[in-house]
Length: 581
Image 1 (cartoon, one colour):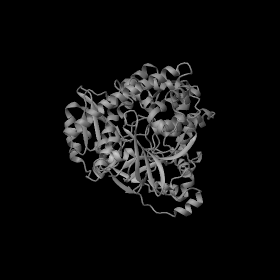
Image 2: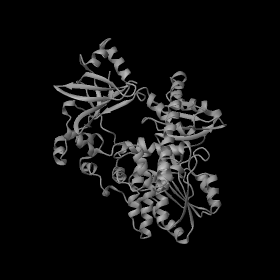
Image 3: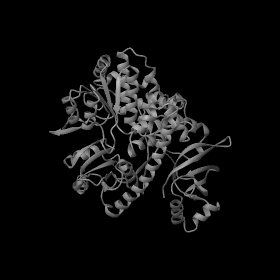
Image 4: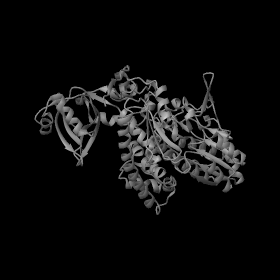
């Protein structure tokens, strides 16, 4: 797909700031590009506990803690109801461990993705009643469960909501009016009346912060809570929160904890997936998917069980989660291939993709929607199921607020919720085509909006790269959503050699040269596509010339530098992330 490259051109006194903070001017440029004010750069480079906001700033946190303290004192049965994704699993674990440590009479339930659907529902409330629960506390859900909470109230069950999702609303006279459930306390930074200074925390962090308030009120030692930061950080990355503000410190501290974790289940999963030292990438793309796979294909109780496991049971559970993730990968590949085919053959001109895959497992609809979004750079919805009511998930691009746009056609859905970038929903099967038609009719996206944009941090010749600069780039960690890995570009370096690598020869190891300096590069995208384009641009036979090292070809590319260690020897290399033909 054709990309539009945009060079970030924010201005600052890079050299003066470089001297002040003792880093390369490139590091200063990267911080400026990320909107970091000069006075905040020291804090950004060195995240610390002082970055954390007071949990008391969360609306209803003190009220919720007072209720919990009273119920614990009375020996009341408290029921945690979480969610089946990585955030919901870690949220449940945080609440369970923290409350158990205080001597609470505590139990938990995580909805089954297929049988129960997302979040609090009537069945789970009835189950809580049968178990004798006096109080339900939700985590990573509940803000959109007004009807369900009314039902709990009617059964005499008290409810506390902890959540971080968007608050449902209706528009009246052009203004949004929140629809809040009638819970005894609602702890969610996205409430209009909440004064918490940072909305971008995940459900696990909301739950974790509430426990700090409770521990203060009960004069309890906080060591157990401090250890749970690894779960709060794991969920932050796994739920794709922006890695800015206090999230930077939470994730950084979580990774430090996780590198020497005392949790038998986490330790086992880390070892079995071959991770030497966990980083953000591993949380989001290796460990996280294993957790999510349990909730997708079986029950999230398996993943929660791993966190609660001892040395004896951890190996079996970890092995099962890895196997489930491999199964999930295979199902995803098959579904994504079919979704792309349908989109290209049937909906090529649609700006909003709505693809119905009746036989695909509903748990992977969101992943397939994400693949569609990446492939076509269009907001994408994938719907599954063969009954009268079907379910779906959506993934969006930055220019399209999915939750807002779904609100414009809210009458179509039986139920829906989510974020600007993602959503989940259910609707009558008979209305799938109507959904596609109406979303496209109301779509205001332009052709330019649908062109993928790659923002370049700096046009930096490969000759400028040094081991010192690469080590300074580590100061930008943790990197992920909201604090993306820097993108550098070089328009003048020449490709002088390429060698196919990988199991199927579908990747390239290349030699780059500029100004007399040579550097190795890795190209992990499709090798055949690259070589085909090389022949088109420079003439037939160019691929053979490059593969034999008998010529040079200047092709603009984007990259990220890294250190490569081979037999104890460190060398600088680049990972090529894009090519501009």
